[in-house]
Image (cartoon, rainbow, N blue to C red):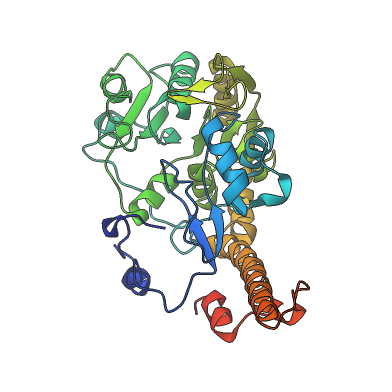
Length: 389
């Protein structure tokens, strides 16, 4: 939930206006479920009026020690974005029965293969690409240009494998260069490479794009290359697939949930120790690690895709169909609503038992047995949990 009003606005989508009006609005009665999703994470229990659900990504193999006991003590469920993230919580000592997989999704009305491609004009490196006599094959990377995202791996692989004379381009969409990743990104190196005519073509941009322009960025490319070291889900991969792109990703990460050899390529990746049990200031519950793809392996796979464009097209089309059929926000919402219904029913049972015990004490009896009739949702709760029309 937002912690400040400025963190959620309807923005460009008027459908969210009604939701914006409800941010921090007073409740008509005590909440039945609290869902908390923010970073840094806040593990203090919510007011004593409902069950605590946590959504918290962590990409380094083991959770911080300081999180484990509060989660075990206060959190009824952790909603994990992927099986990979679920395994991080399991390895850290969180009981399996508390872990539910609630994935991300995409809006198929916005992200689909028919979106008009983004037109490049003044972006770094764009002029050189526009001068090419033939349409280049475009590899795309989307994400912060930081170590965890694997930007150095994809750039090194591309520079090793391709020459300046080839009709190919690496398109880099950087993010958060002035916010979360300020002072730790590779923007300056990437700008220098984009302006170096002795290297294979690179186009670089870090503008914040509205959703429809981001969709056009995907359809302007031919293949996504995303060799991340640590992710809890990696939404750009799903977005690229929705737009008809085949994808190249590490094997063994969260994208294993929706990427196989029919929609892309999984490059071998090793679990590389980070040295000890610490990530920054956090001591973790075990030796931390991230995935590592070799630039040689990634470059070889990029070359294979470049030389087999028909196969790339087939896998891209299969990926778009897969996303439409099972990985939209509607699919993700249905899973979340199912959990909310279950948790709401549990809250009702708990409250019913407490009320019965109170009545029993007043009447001189304990009233320990729960009333099964209390498990039904109230009409008001059912309306709250019904999908929006």
